Length: 95
Image 1 (cartoon, one colour):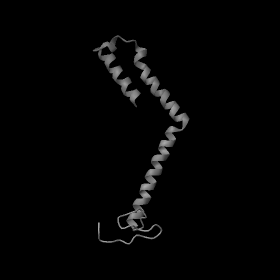
Image 2 (tube, helix red, strand yellow; image 1 turned 60 degrees about the vertical axis):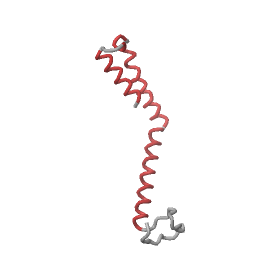
Image 3 (cartoon, rainbow, N blue to C red; image 1 turned 90 degrees about the horizontal axis):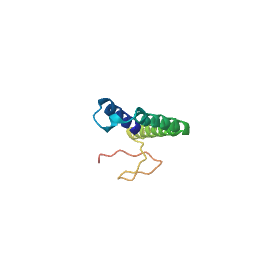
Image 4 (tube, rainbow, N blue to C red; image 1 turned 45 degrees about the vertical axis):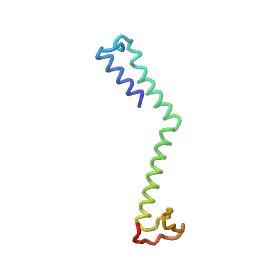
């Protein structure tokens, strides 16, 4: 993402002609876009993108599961009352 932002900034400066960037050759302006494409290719080929997506999905599923268990009163997370794992938590009025 940073490569794209830098490339867009350089492109705008080149087209506006306001700074020293206007005197640079065009291939210097296109380098960040090429680096972004290279990064995306490497990230996809190495499985980094799929791994991040799988981690987000796992976290979302686990959060949903914990929320549903808590709504049913079956949460096994440690609370101030010290509920015992394996047994349903008895709801109380203290919170």
